[in-house]
Length: 237
Length: 119
Image (tube, rainbow over all chains, first blue to last red; front, side, top):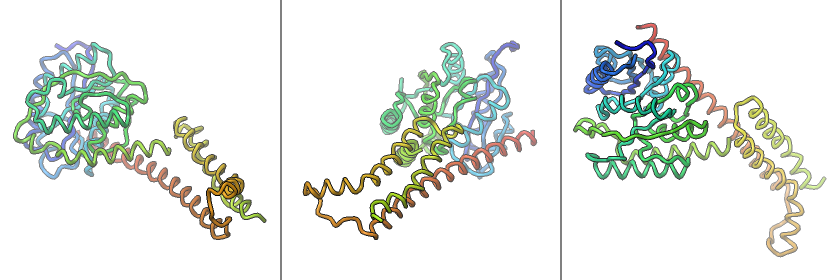
């Protein structure tokens, strides 16, 4: 029985052509949430997929928001969090649709956010990076370093998709980039508006599928270019 | 009329318009204090540079730090064109950014409303 005073939790899963895994991810997070005390809803933001991502997510019991146009990971995450804010959720969590994140880590993050009273909590794969390839470790550490140089935000895993947001973060946090670079920009904007940012260790589950779907390290070049552009644009108004 | 004065008079309206626009944006809450300070610093630097163009040139010339010809009418036109281009480019960038933001918000809101209707 869920207590009436339990915080309302919204799990946001941005997805683009993830029909293979999205159903399983939704089911597993629902199972984990059922064991917890939280009133919850799982929202899949289908970012203009060409496959059956939306149908599979709906069949698994998620609320599906379909983007008419493909906007990128940042745009899909913004839509999901805006839905959570408009529907009065107290806490939101974002996780990847490729099955990279363990549902237990999401629940653990929600509990940590409540306990620490943070506004934005990042699930870091690099605090304990067992199972992660050296190339991925190098790529992620590099981007975290660049995030620190450009924006002064110190994070061990600035690109992590598993993030937990307080109500304040849902109301105040906004970013402009639409692609993967939003991960770094979000941290910067959170710092600018004075949100309390924290980190906690998570494990990353890499399957052959998620390895294939994951970001190419060369994509980091585009991310850095976009972040630099954003930083310079900020200087000139 | 002195060419240096002409240069200043031709550019002054654009510099004042840019400063006014930066202050208005800040006062209407569309810009941060830091952005305002940076915008003011850039445009005031341009204004001071143009206002002091003649003494700067004289000083450089007498100290043999430059051997260029004094300001020609073509130079006046060219510098004015650069300032106007900078002004227009900055305004266009701001407008594009605002439009991009509105389009994103529209797309986001439309997607949420359509999903609410299909529930």
